[in-house]
Length: 173
Image 1 (spheres, helix red, strand yellow):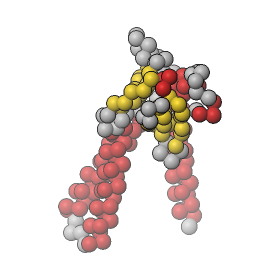
Image 2 (tube, one colour):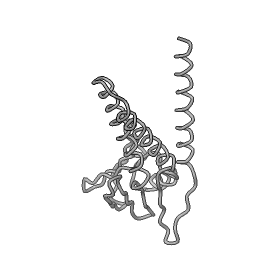
Image 3 (cartoon, rainbow, N blue to C red):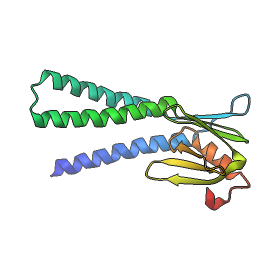
């Protein structure tokens, strides 16, 4: 009983440290390129975490081949492989692909699948934060939606730029 409570406590502290680390990186100052365009990318932690999860998948695959699995072991191992493999691949895709480029006239978002969407700042009508997915959703006048992840390094620069837009009311950000 005491060991269970200690394990939960340690896990809670680890999660708190990781989230604090990622949140601190969103406040990091980013400098624009020579042409005045800011580029925001995901934190490297996403890449390392994704690689660690894929390593766990590799270990479970090797265990599955070297052990004589019964049906329960095979099911549980397959479940772990599916869960960690999906999360690992998603983490790496976020790090490799998701980025936001912006300046005082436009916002360009590259999704985790590499799809690029562009919206003019004057066309943004509403900015919504989805706490479940951790995405900031920019809704345009033509129905376009751009999704920006909350753990982009330098995200505060982007949100400050949005707040400075005169056509966006404070309750829409």
